[in-house]
Amino acid sequence: MENKQELQSLLDRTAAVCRSLTGSGRQATYIPELATVDPSLFALSAVTLDGAVLSSGDIGARFSMQSMSKVMSLSFALERLGYDEVFSHVGMEPCSEPFNSIMKLEMTSDTPLNPFINSGSIIMAGLLAERLGSGVIDEMLDFASRMTGNKSGLAVNERVYRSESSTADRNRALAYFMHSSGALSFEVEKSLDLYFRLCSIEVGTDDLAVMGATLANAGKNPLTKETIVSVDTSYTVIGIMSVCGLYDESGWFAVKAGVPAKSGVSGGIVCAVPGRMGLAVFSPPLGKGGNSVAGVEAVSRLSKELKLRGI
Ligand code: GLU
Image (tube, rainbow, N blue to C red; front, top):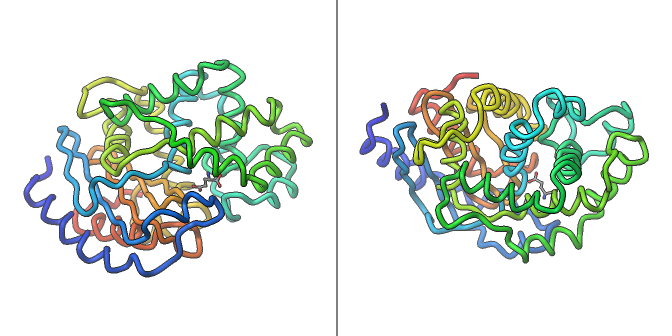
């Protein structure tokens, strides 16, 4: 088990160094609400498998999950619908194009490469909305709250949701294209609506680090001791995080940091290190590949110092 004092001091040192990188990169502006976030915010959390939550930096910072919600959605879909049904709609291969690329879909006219790119996640949302009906968002918020151990209950940030939904030409284009090719066989606007709501769920790094730790702990939340997902689901999700988690920079990140992770355009990164811990970092400015510049650096440093590398 990790030494908590040493871990806290490592988080503090890492936060102090990486905070200076918040001037590098640019925060996402294509969702207008994301452009209003203070770019100098920096927060870092680690959750050990014996249930210690350690944080550093702007620990009160709250932000939308964006694509990090895809970790939760995939976990939920695998539990509710099963592996065979989920992977009859999406693949599990990395994508060499940006997360919202239409090109790959058009070139192959096939199912999306994985559930962590927008096309794959919109299909997951459509599938869940169709199977579970209008209560699906409440069920998923409850699942997300239990997975993150958030006692007050996670909720959708309505401002982010409206901002995202009213400026979503690209995601609409993806969804309607998939509908025309037959890859998305569910109602398009319902699929998109659930997708936008999931991306807009508000969290802190402590919530995300518990989510990562739950997967790292073979599906059992280390704080509440509740089994959230099966061992099989946890390893399926971690496997996909290992190869598809950082958009088309997943290979580079695997070499640089070597831990299963998922990023989001709000500037967060959540990591699940099997048998060791969950980690999460938040810093809005993104590099060319859409990943948090300071966040990638922080995870890489922690991975090296704690010898987390495992992929
Ligand atoms: N809601 C964002 C979008 O659909 C999520 C993208 C991301 O975080 O990668 O564009």
